[in-house]
Length: 165
Image (cartoon, rainbow, N blue to C red; front, side, top):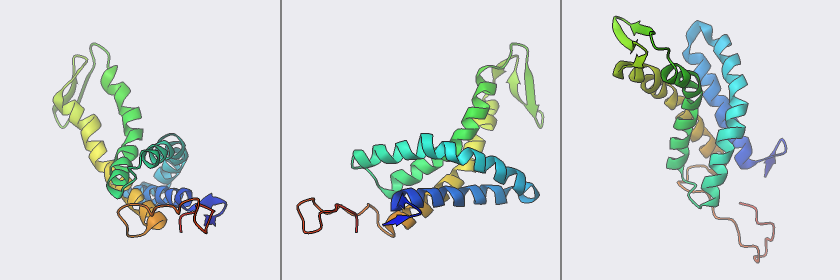
């Protein structure tokens, strides 16, 4: 079954990413249009370079399950923050200093424990629910309330299309 020329899985992944993008933008309150544009520009790259390869890898290994989809969604939603924050954490200059509420994040060019927590852990925990939401929506649209996708019909059956019913 195809929707706009896409397979059911591809259409559901696209819809899941759109739900995650809209939920992420709505989370920012009055700044939602700005974040909607930014997230909408980022989503196609995540879809091509992260979602599709993870899906194909899991499907090829026979490990396509809802819990892997949820975990992958949480990790993929956190990737943009990793790309933005990691250079700050890794390449801070020797004499740099940064603090939030009096707590040092970078002290003499070295990232403190609070810095790692502030730059990487907190944003990951904040972004992961949007990826989980997108993964659950994509799974429900593609496979319904199943824990695993349905098995394709064997090629020697009366229905030789091999399509998933």
